[in-house]
Amino acid sequence: MQGKIFSPGLRMTRGAIIAVFLLLFAGPLSPVSAQEEEEENVCVSCHLDMEDILLQVALDWQQSVHAEAGVSCQDCHGGDPTDYGEAMEPATGFKGKPAKADIPTLCAKCHSDKVKMRAYSLPSNQFARYSRSVHGKALLERKNENAPSCIDCHGRHKIKRVADPQSTVHRSNIVKTCAKCHSSKKVMQSSGLPANQYELYKNSLHGKLYFAGDLGVPTCVNCHDNHDIKKPQTLAVRLVCVNCHVDQEESYRKSGHWAAAQETGKPVCIHCHSNHAIAKPSIAKFKEPGPGNCVNCHDRNSLQMEKANAIYLMQQATEEYMKLGAEADERINEWSGNGFETSHLERKVKKIKSILKEMGVISHSLDTESLLEKAKIAQKLSNQVTVEVNAMTDELVKRRWGLIATWTIFLCFSGALSIRARHCKRKD
Ligand code: HEC
Ligand code: HEC
Ligand code: HEC
Ligand code: HEC
Ligand code: HEC
Ligand code: HEC
Ligand code: HEC
Ligand code: HEC
Ligand code: HEC
Image 1: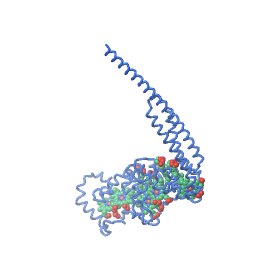
Image 2: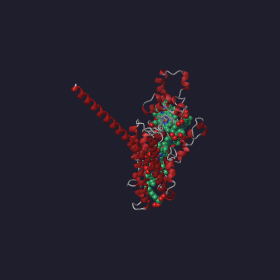
Image 3: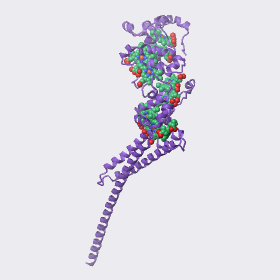
Image 4: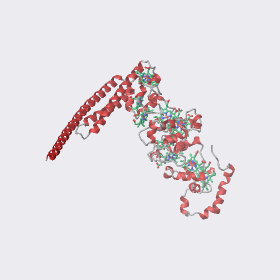
C-alpha cells in the first residue's frame, strides 16, 4: 500500500545527495534572507520545490485548517523541520507515510486531547466514536483497508473546517463523499454489501430535495451518524425518522403496528416507506400492491385489509371534497370584483386541505373513528361551500338576466323610436 519512491538503500545517502545538491545550486540562488531561513519550515519549502505528488501535498496542506492553526508536516510525519539535509532522517523521528490503519491514532494524538481541542471549541470524541463504529472496527480490528480512516472522509492534506463549503464533509458534499465507496461495487463486495444506496437516495424524495438545496432533509449522516456509524438496527432507525417526523411517530404509536413492532421489530417506518428510496406516499398505498403497501403484509380478505379499505375510502372521499372546494374556489376567484364577500369561503377550502393533510398523519394510528370524524368535517365544509357558491351563481345569473332584459327593452325601445322617426320624416 505504501508506494515508496526511493529504495531504502538510496534513502541512507539521501541526506548527503541533497546537501551536495543544495551546496551546488539551491543555496546561492535562494532569495530568502538569513533570518527568514531560521524561521522557515524546511519540509514545506523543500516540498514546494518538488514536483507531482511531493509538491501537491504541500500545496494542499497550505490550504488546510491545519496550516492555519500552525499544525505542520512534522506534527504528523515527524522529522526535523529546521534541518534541510537531515529533515527526513529516521534519527530525527521521521516516520514517513503512515500505514492506513495507523492514521486514526495519528489524528487522535491531537483530536482526542481535550485540553488542546477545547482551545478551538472542538469536541474530542471523534476517535472514541469512530473506533467503535462499523468503519473503525473493520479497519482497526479486521484490517479491512476498504473501510475509511479519517482522511477518506476529511481529505488527505487539504483538510477543511466542517463549516467550510469546500470541506469534503460539508453538508453539500457529504453524500458524494460516502458514495465514493458506497456506490463502488468493488469496495462493497468485499463486505457483502449492496452498492446502491447513493443511487436510491438520489432518486428519493429526500434526495431530490437535497440536490435542490433543501437544508431540512436528511443526508447519509443524519440517519447513520458521522463517526459512530453502526450496523443499522431497524428500531433504532425509527428513532432517526422521528427526529424530523414527530407527528407521524406520535400517531403511529397509537396503532397495533407499534405494539407488534415491540415484539418483532416490524412494521416500523422503513417497512412501509423504505429507507433510501422514500417516495411521496399516496392513499393508493392502502389499496394497491407495491413495496411497503398494506397488501404486502396483509391478506386481501383479512380484517386488516377491511380496515385499510375503510381508511382508503374516507381519504378518497375527502380528496373529492377538496376537489369540489377547489373548483368552487376557482369560480370564486373568477368572480372577485362582482361585489361578493368570498373570503370566508376561501378559508373553508383551506381548512379542507389541512384536514386532508391531518388525515395523512392520523392514518398512521389506524384509528378509523378519528378519521371518520375528520372526513365528516371536510364533507360539511365542502357542502357549505358548494351551497353558497351555487347561491352566488344563481344570484349572478339573475343579475345577468336582469341586465340582458334591460338592454333588450332599451334596444327595442330605441329601435321603435328610430323607425317612428324615419316614418315621420317620410310623411313630411
Ligand atoms: C530537501 C528536500 C526535502 C526536505 C527538507 C523534506 N523533504 Fe520530504 N521528501 C523529499 C523527497 C525528494 C521525497 C521523496 C523521496 C523519499 O521518499 O525519500 C520526500 C518524501 C516525503 C514523504 C513521503 C515518504 C514516504 O514514505 O512515502 C513524507 C511523508 C515527507 N517527505 C515528509 C517530510 C517532512 C515531514 C519533512 C520535514 C521534517 C520533509 N519531508 C522534508 C524532499 C524533502
Ligand atoms: C494532519 C496530519 C498531516 C500533516 C499536517 C501533513 N501530512 Fe502528509 N500525510 C498525512 C497522512 C495521514 C498521509 C497518508 C496519506 C495516505 O495514506 O493516503 C500523508 C502522506 C504524505 C505523503 C505521501 C504521499 C503519497 O501519496 O505517497 C507525503 C509526501 C506527505 N504526506 C508530505 C507532507 C508534507 C510535505 C507536509 C507539510 C507540507 C505534510 N505531509 C503534512 C498526514 C499529514
Ligand atoms: C498536531 C495536532 C493535530 C493533528 C495530528 C491533527 N489535527 Fe486536526 N486539527 C488540529 C487543530 C489544532 C485544529 C483546529 C484548527 C482551528 O480550528 O483553527 C484541527 C482541526 C481539524 C479539523 C477541522 C475541525 C472544524 O473546525 O470543523 C478537522 C476536520 C481535522 N482537524 C481533522 C484531522 C485529521 C483527519 C487528522 C489526521 C489526519 C488531524 N486532524 C490531525 C490539530 C491536529
Ligand atoms: C465516514 C466519514 C468520517 C470518518 C471516517 C471520520 N469523520 Fe470526522 N466528520 C465526518 C463528518 C460528516 C463530520 C461533520 C459533522 C457534522 O456536520 O455534524 C465530521 C466532523 C469532524 C470534526 C469536526 C468536529 C466534530 O466532531 O464535528 C473533526 C475534528 C473530525 N471530524 C475529525 C475526525 C477524526 C480525527 C477522524 C478519525 C478518527 C474522523 N473525523 C473520521 C465524517 C467522518
Ligand atoms: C473508504 C470507503 C468508505 C467511505 C468513504 C465510507 N464508507 Fe461506509 N463502509 C465502507 C466499508 C468497506 C464498509 C463495510 C465494513 C465491514 O466490512 O464491516 C462500510 C460500512 C458502512 C455501513 C454499515 C453497513 C452494514 O450493514 O454493515 C454504513 C451504514 C456505512 N458504511 C455508512 C457510511 C456513511 C454514512 C458514510 C459517509 C459519511 C460512509 N459509510 C463512508 C466503506 C466506506
Ligand atoms: C432517511 C434515513 C437514511 C438516509 C438518508 C440514508 N440511509 Fe442508509 N440506511 C437507513 C436505514 C434505516 C437502513 C437500514 C435498513 C434495514 O435495516 O433494513 C440503512 C442501511 C444502509 C446500509 C446497509 C446496506 C443497505 O443498503 O441496507 C448502508 C451501507 C447505508 N445505509 C449507507 C447509506 C449511504 C451511503 C447514504 C447516503 C447516500 C445513506 N445510507 C442514506 C437510513 C438512511
Ligand atoms: C433530518 C430530518 C429528516 C429525517 C431524519 C427524515 N426525514 Fe423524511 N422528510 C424530511 C423533510 C424536510 C421532508 C420534505 C418535507 C415534507 O414533506 O415534510 C421529508 C419528506 C418525507 C416523506 C414524504 C412526505 C410528503 O409530504 O410526501 C416521507 C414519507 C418521509 N420523509 C419519510 C421518512 C422516513 C421513513 C425517515 C426515516 C427512515 C425520514 N423521513 C427521515 C426530513 C427528514
Ligand atoms: C411490513 C408488514 C406490514 C405492513 C406493510 C402493514 N402491516 Fe398492518 N400489521 C402488521 C403486523 C405484523 C401486525 C400485527 C399482527 C396482526 O394483527 O396481523 C399488523 C396489524 C395490523 C392491523 C391490526 C391492528 C390494529 O391496530 O387494528 C391493522 C388494522 C393493520 N395492520 C392495517 C394495516 C394497514 C392499513 C397497512 C397499510 C397502510 C398495513 N397494515 C401495512 C404488518 C404490516
Ligand atoms: C404500516 C405502514 C406505515 C408505517 C409503519 C409508517 N407509515 Fe408513514 N405513511 C404510510 C402511508 C400509507 C402514508 C400515506 C398516508 C395518506 O396519504 O393517507 C404515509 C404517509 C407518511 C408521510 C407523508 C405525510 C403524511 O403524513 O401524509 C410521512 C412523512 C410519513 N408517512 C412518515 C412516517 C414515519 C416517520 C413513520 C414511522 C414513525 C411512518 N411513516 C410509518 C404508511 C406507513
